[in-house]
Length: 98
Image (cartoon, rainbow, N blue to C red; front, side, top):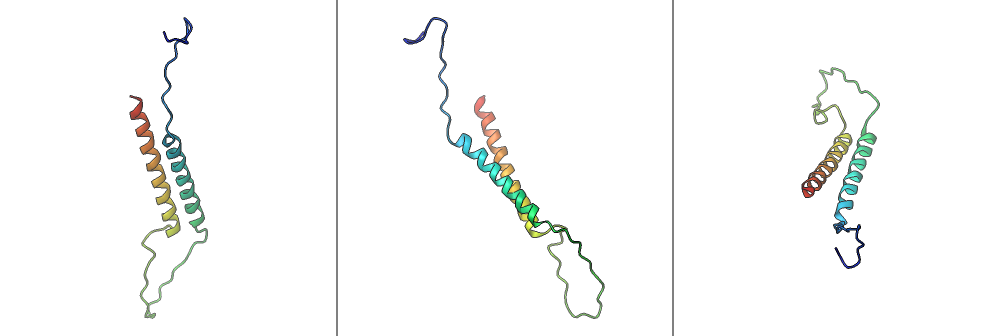
C-alpha cells in the first residue's frame, strides 16, 4: 500500500513508451507503401512483340531476362525491405514482452 492509494486501489507502474516503438512500425509501413506505389507505377500494360531478323547486324541484349520492368523490380525490393523492417520490429516487440 502506497501513501496515496486507497484500500482497494493498487497502481502498477506503467512502462515508459519509447518513441521508437511507434516510429519504427510507421517507418516500415511507409516504406512498404512507397514500394508498392513504385511497383504499381512501373508495371507496363502493353505487350511487346518480337520478330526473327537474321540479316540485321545488331546484337540483341535483353532486359535482365525477366518479365517485369526494372521499376517494378525496384518497387518490390523496397516493399520487401519495409516488410523485413516490420518483421524485425514485431519480433523485437514480442521478445520484450517475455
